[in-house]
Length: 441
Image 1 (cartoon, rainbow, N blue to C red):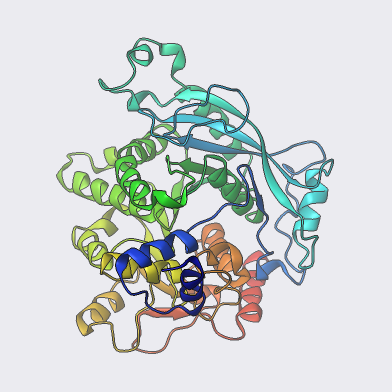
Image 2: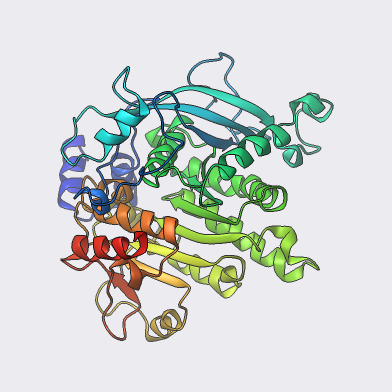
């Protein structure tokens, strides 16, 4: 098959004559980066487009001098040099904690100016986020095991638990919302990418709470799909340790998790482990289940049947709600389903495809919310896989949930009677702005 034929298949969304060809398609349509340390700021969420709601109003933390830093936790080993890429694209054996300094807009722009421009629908096209520097606090102590570097086992000064917690508590104390939000990225990205995505999401949250980028060691190579998927599974151990640490040691009210693409496999496997541990623990709180809030799955590349297994094993017992975003225009998941021979959790059901028993189960679970973004403005942009950043409607719904914890019915979404899937109505912008005004007033 020629490269031109592969492109034609990708553009037309037709079946390739074999799974090898489908794998080549996945390489073309998978997650991509624009550069090693920058991303373009996502379109302004529709809830802010008319200027009625200002997420930064009265926020004393956004001033002329301060560049908010984004917290991170990474399972990558550090690079030898102090500057970019900061951490290597390979597995480490401990979890490292720190904070990344991020700039936005053009050189010399203050954060107050950058915040103002970021809310403009027709802002300049070249409006990027950039990792300027990082500050590593040290290693999470409980991830140092008998298999770790012996130098770490005998170096108490390398442990960064206290420094990280002090910085985190300072951030929470400076916020009206004492919640932590964790972003878990997909495959094929370097260390900086999740920090930048977390930074833009936190920006549009008005810098409430504290945002953490969990940077598992994916590889920024199109050929790393299967290796990255395996690495995501290995990383679930470190993520579980991190969640337990946050719940036990910090004063956080709730910990909310956003998983994207291959990162949803890491998230769901972690939650499954925690659910199994909680069922056998004398103290369920010891696995952090008492502080886990909303879990959001975006473009989820988890096998749909495997997700059913997790739910049957009481995954919902350790979280407040599960928000699964679905799409019928996500070509990356279409290709993944073809390769693995099984539908993915983030794919929308075709008409008549959902089994009656599944529909009955979902209708009886108010804490499991299925949200179809197919009709959301901008959701099909590119390959349709990055809708949570590309669609101003989808991003608005996610931000609304994170800031207010509102049920889909209170976020302007609708669903047909007897159906378990929530949808974006044509008048969604008006509906969501009205609901937001009611809350803010």
